[in-house]
Image 1 (cartoon, rainbow, N blue to C red):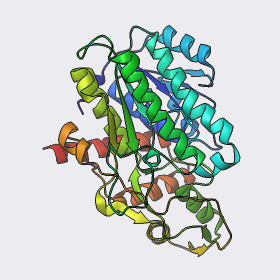
Image 2: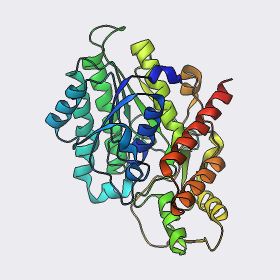
Image 3: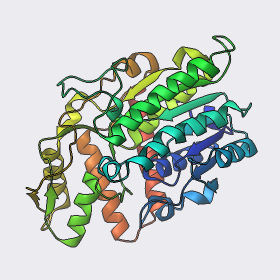
Length: 360
């Protein structure tokens, strides 16, 4: 990733008020990009967007991506060069309760963003962010590769598989139509289970653990043996930025699907995560098993990142232990009333230094 590339670039970012979107907004601002965000109001209270004063350094439009006209108007008014689409309904268990809203947001919302970009002649690059759960999960012990079939058991996972198919159709039908070296370069990015400071989402493992620690109550764990590709939020974000640079410089050559997961050793079971966080937090932190019935969730899920390593030169920089240490530090700093924008920018700088050391 080359910081000079982003200076002055006009970036349209959907979902900028969410957890991942707030971190990416701060990073783009630090790189000198001109950022315009489009999203609903922050989805939690508290939220990283406000806690880290993310909106101070960017333009922002409150807009539902299910409204095509609203998305089109906002994009055409800003005239971006790069579009990064992150807005989504991101929770598996909520998708069981609200399947129609999940499909409307994750499938038709993606259609609306791509359609708006198709009618905005300034756009050169689009990165559509989906999820590792877009793959048809066969509970394999090896990682899923980018050419594996799309699928998904639950409405969330399935909707993201659908969004991948939408992306492929728009690429082939509209964005490659002017030849291999022109048109809009559109790629999709699939990340693992993203964790980091400032995530207060309901029904998500690490936020649930930290809330229990704050209340001095045991963490209740549903599926201690479920294995996921855990990674600090800055890991996939660095992948999205690296991918966008390659799309800008090389066009359709990189216009395809990409995995940005952790190192193989960091695909760990839930029990391992909670025990590490209990140890890092200290005090009376503890956990217990929830013995009640719950909707289906994948038991084993892992990503193969060989393609991103070899073709993009991207690789993870922080181990899972390092990620968990930074999350505990972030959350305890927030409880102590520290400047969280400064701490986010410090962690971004530390991560960038780790990237540079690995690239050297």
